[in-house]
Image (tube, rainbow, N blue to C red; front, top):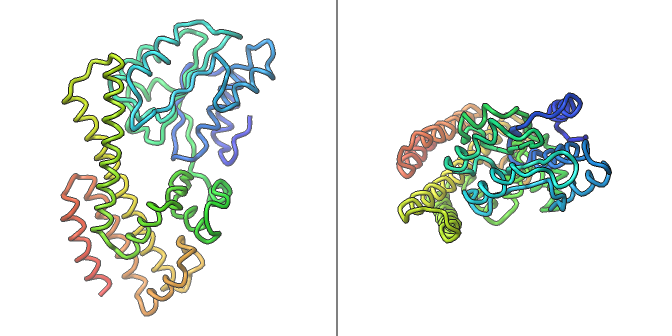
Length: 348
């Protein structure tokens, strides 16, 4: 099997196929690093290994969506996996023998989006799976998984993609310089790179460059409200499907999803701001060619004129310090206001 730009993962999975695959794997790494494609290729090889017609089984398993009856692929419909779907499509279905061949493969995409209830229910399947079952969990935030889940899976690490691979994945999604900037600012995350090429992403970059913290916070709040609404709708669907859940449980879970989205976008805005100051330091040092913001070189050189590179580096450190403060649940408004004063003092 071939996994582009992920030689370590390819080596680990190829070795697993030769020695006999384990019952459970955790593919962990940043979004857009190729975990989905690798999982589909790995599942196809597992199913082909016991099929009468290996090539046909492999071909069907590689299709997206796949018509192979022994490949179950579960992706969250909203902010989180629905509990009943995890129970029905994975936990209960794992007890059934293969429809063809001798293997069944279950892939859970965005495994961190499973609520604790689902993860605890899945634990027994991970501990004592039928001999013909293989589970593959994909996660870009493995820390959000219960330790009992992660510890029962063989980890396979996916590194951030190199800039060239991200640029190739983006194709002609924007102007060449903008695509180059998005690829570098994404730190190997193709999904983030794609976000930066959307209207919301472009607005985030502008807010980060101009240090318009009020607009950044407002945009994060609106995104959080959208995520909360989507989560509430998914939870209400679960309730209608028969899952016992109180109105308070639904409200609390929806609020958590909203806060998470709000926090993620706010953190992204600060990351982009720190990257801008990093580029300013490079431009002030006469090394503008290493800048991430390739589509704003003129603006960088203009702002860097007469600027002390040390001041720009210190500004980047202040932004990163604010990111750490927000992790401690301090007031976002006060933290951003304090950042404004500290940046003004450093940059004059």
